[in-house]
Structure formats: C-alpha cells, structure tokens
Amino acid sequence: MRICLVGVRGGGLLGDAIGGSEKQIALLARHFARRGHDVTLVASMYGGADVKVDGVMLRAAWDPDKGLRWLRAPAYRFPNLKRVLLGIDADLYYVRGATPFSFSVLKVGRWLGSPALLGLASDRDLHPDSGRVLFGLGASRSHRALGYMAWLGFQRRALHAADVVVVQNSGQAAICAARGLPHALIPSIVEKPPEELLSQSLDYDVVWVGNVYRTRRSKGVDELARLAQSLPAVRFAVVGMLKAATVQAAVARLHALTNVDLLGAMTNAETQRCIARSRVVVNTSPAEGFSNVMLEGWALGKPAVTLTVNPSGLLHEEGLGRCADGDPDVMASLLRAALQDEAWLTVVGQRARGYVRSVHAADVVCARYEQLAALTSSPSNLTLRERRDV
Image 1 (cartoon, one colour):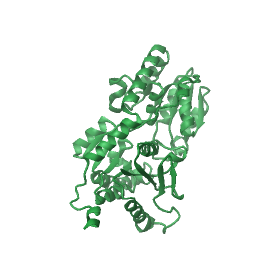
Image 2 (cartoon, helix red, strand yellow):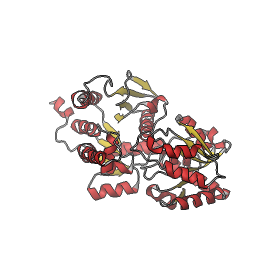
Image 3 (spheres, rainbow, N blue to C red):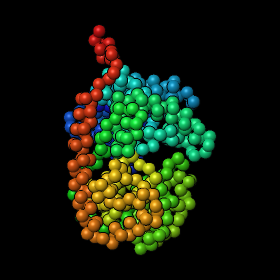
Image 4 (cartoon, rainbow, N blue to C red):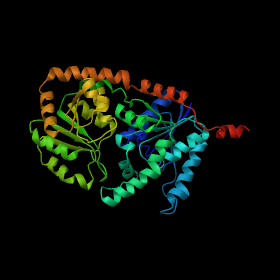
C-alpha cells in the first residue's frame, strides 16, 4: 500500500528534537515502512532534497523561499502541495492536528478515492480555540476573533472533509459522535525502549517534559514551578525548550530552586534516558490529546501523576497513575505519597509496561490503521484513477 503522511517538519526522521505530534507522524511512517508499505512523509517546513530515511521518502511540500509574501499560500504553496500529493498517488492520506493545509490534504485524498484521515493531536483540535494554533496567535480579544475565523475556514472544514477523524481518547470520540463526525479511536504509537534503559540508576524523583516556544501554548509551567516549590525534598528534571515570554517568570522561579535541574531541549534518545533515570513522570498541562511523555514513561515502567489530563480515564480505570483533577494541592499530596510508596511504584510500573505492549505497540497500532484503510472508501462516485482509465 502507498501511504502518504503530511506533517510540518521532517525532524522526526532526521533525529531532531520535535514535538509530540511530529513524533507520532514519524513513528507511524517508520513502522509502516518496516511493515512493507511504500511510505512518503511530506513536510511543509522541510526545504531539503528528497531523501530516504529508514525506508521512508521524505519530501518537501514546497520551497520555503519561493512565493510572494502575503500571496505564498494561495498562489504557490497550496497549489504546489496539491501537485506533490497528486504525484504520490497514495492509497492512504493522513494529516495530523490543526494545520492550514489539512483540508487541502484531505481534499486530494478524497478526489483520488483514497481514504483521507485526519488525526487529532490534542483535545483542542475539536474546538474553535485551535484556530489560534494555525497562525501562532495569542490570547488577546482580537487574536481570539481571528482564531475563530481561522477555525471556520481551516480546521472545521478539515474535520468535515475527513473520511475518518482518528481520535486518541474516549473524550474525543464522544465529541465526534455528538457532532456526527465519522471517527475511529486508534491508540497513539510508542516504540519499545532499549533494554539498557530499564536498568538505569535513578537520579531524579520526577521528570517533566514539554516545549513552550509560542505564547499560544500552555503546558502548565506555572503549575510546575508551584509544585516543585512545594516539594523541596523532591528532585525534579525539567526537559524542553521554554522560550515563550509568557513562561519566563515561572522559568526564573524554577531556576532559583535547588531541587530542579533545567535541562533544556533534548533529542528523543536523550529524553528517553532522562525519563529512565526518573521514578515518576508528571504532567501539569491543562489539556492534551494523549501525552507522548506519559506513554514513553509507561513503556519504561514509570507511573504518571498528572494535574488535569487523564486520557480515557486510564490513570484511574487501568491504575496507571494518579490524577489530581485540576487541584494543585492534591497533586502535590498525590506525588508525595507515590514517591514514598516503593511497592506502588513497582506494581504500577509493571502494569504500565504491560498495557503499552498490548495497546500502543507499533505493530498493534499500524495494524489498526491498515484495517481502517481497508474499510474506508471515498464517497466520490468517480475518482481520479477511474477518470484516468476512461
């Protein structure tokens, strides 16, 4: 099967430090190729020559230096993206998250008669607030108004254009059902960690991982600083690029704490090693789709303690950690209790590894996509392939 995935960067294949959504796209691409599919990853921010990495053809959506300012998207970029996608002539098209080009990708897939899937990267992708994500807008009234218009013109159209919206958790599935959107719950993918990481020395009690490089993003950095300040005896490792002006006050507070190591941006391998050297993964974000960091922690046998996020109720229903339901004081108590209970850490860690192997392993997830592709057909009466045969 020819599979075309479309993302923002190709860094997930090239070993760069990337965000969670791009990591998921790269993992899917790499493992689809390993299973024998002809896979292309088209990246909008990749300006290099076509290159094959781990069996995946990485291609640029357009030349970032071409096109007239203000007219680049309609006059050059989107037409060029369409040409590239049509040339690939894939049997399955997949785009993830809220992007300005999602609708264009899905439209090409449906025109070709190939299944066109829109994967959600966050719970926010289903709501008008995701319009601000499209153009990196802030939280002012004017930016929110522009974000709402962007939502109507781009993300909402993409949601209704997809043959299937691929959701990450039961909450997203419920919203899609209420809106009449065809959807399928396919778990996020996580790779089996190297065996050597399972026997690392424990240098930290807690690890937090996240990137905040735009004002529109919120990963709960303020809440993290408050948590670390309330638990001076707990050793924190903080990984990620924290560059947005909105989090600098919290970053300064973290810098001043002797129990916190601010480690900056890391490659995926470096991040994995840091998680392996920690006892618990924490998440203070107000919203996620399905945290890659929690998944990677579970794969390494690390329980999760979160402030708000609890995808599909797994922390409670599957016993994979603890959630404070939005209360910072409760989170501090839960974390303190967890770190004092070695038996609990061991049992939950073993349970988490078993859960990941059975639900989120690469072959399990890729097989779900293959099944979905086989079941999904375009509603078009006459596809481009049929027109070519006439």
